[in-house]
Image 1 (cartoon, helix red, strand yellow):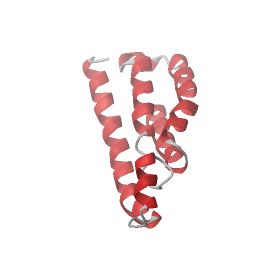
Image 2 (cartoon, rainbow, N blue to C red):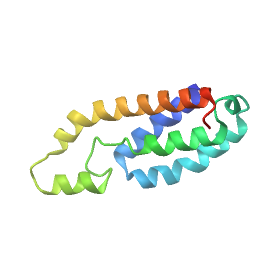
Image 3 (cartoon, helix red, strand yellow):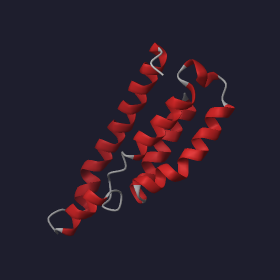
Amino acid sequence: MPVLFLLSITAMIMATFMSNTATANLLMPIAVSIATAMSGLQSFGGLSLIVICVALSASMGMSLPISTPPNALAHSTGLVSSSDFMKTGKYISTLGVCKIFTVLVCLGMVGYF
């Protein structure tokens, strides 16, 4: 599970500084190769768990305007500055990744995947 959490945090941090879609495209092959190499992950949901976790965590990069087109649009109005994104994004991103990780691991333990 530490590997899954580390991949989630990495996806969120990368998505903060680049596009969420590009982050998912870069990390997905790495996550799949890690998931196939880990034998202990099968009891928690296997490949599905790690792929879903990385994809959702990549969507949590919200601390800069470059992350998503809606952030860029809001920033282009001039009403929201980059520091405003940083103020709220650091909390939302961190809580979001923790919640995604917790929910997916719990669902994997129950046998949903």
